[in-house]
Length: 511
Image (cartoon, rainbow, N blue to C red):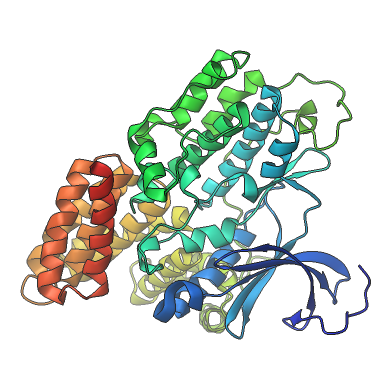
């Protein structure tokens, strides 16, 4: 590719010259492109929000840019690097590293039968990526062979992380049909039925992918999405050793556990899955020299990174290395500017750094510090840093409840946001317990005024019941919610319509 613009070529954001269309779907297109400013080849994904959600396009636009920003913070060599993201006209664009290699679907088709050692090496590399992704926390939601690239040196790169995270959040509100966004053959039961998703959802998709690599086909196929979903919910997968007797028994057992219907019966994490794959990885030695050999990186096992402490936030404006205390007022003004410009990560760092100084100057329980801590917690959530936001929200909730009582609306709001953090962190049982403890307060407090908050808590309870595998309780909860929400809003309102779609899916698969 040359550095000169091609006549008539479209240029996105004033610098990315589109070259070759390499992928297309209902959501948009993927192009190879040329970055005119830095003289490099890139990949550009163009997304049309108006084709997805109609009036909700603005919401999707906001979430797309937010998730691209959060995704760009994940530091792992197995993830495609995000260079840029934004909006231009009616389209959203995501600029990524260009990967020279073959996607896993093509790789599988060209190497049949697929050596089981290769399958183990691929699954182990994917566990390393998922371990880093889930620590953020982000859930991919659309892990499949087309979203995995095998590079020439045998290393894997996972694609579509940010986009998948956006498009599959509250999917029934982002489609006109109510059909979940994703690929049915790789979709976990709880995801397909509109339940809460978490790391366990990606592990199920990993099980489908590993079964396909070992057997040559996905465990559940069909002519319709509903038929495939029914098989995911009610049929046991064929053990891979029935199809490939040379597959080691521990590997077959791991695949069956990854494909468990109940998320709690799957391995606890991507890290644990990697540890179970570790004894099956190839021993250290010289590479075979074959192109695109996924065992090559395992001269030294490519293990997931261990948990690491959060990097200390940099000192905010107004401080220096000699230990001068930062100017709190000046730092607050800077935070306002940064938030106005959408530079949320920098705002988080400054807020976290000035809180100790503000507490020393004004007192730990002063209105100034309380306001700063509220802003800090809210900004952490907006930045997707749920693990750091959770203790802040719990502390705020406890302090407010001690002052104004457990039924205080502000305390309840902090607890509600803490439950959202638990949900995002992939802890459905803990989130479910928190929402259930909140529900009586919302039902009593707003019985004669605003019932919408109570209805929303009940909706989340129903989704989490699906996530933990209790479909009977989920059906009963959502059925009652549908009746009450139709009485409040009318049957044509988006809220009961969403509940009705989930019940329709759940009712169909329940038979």
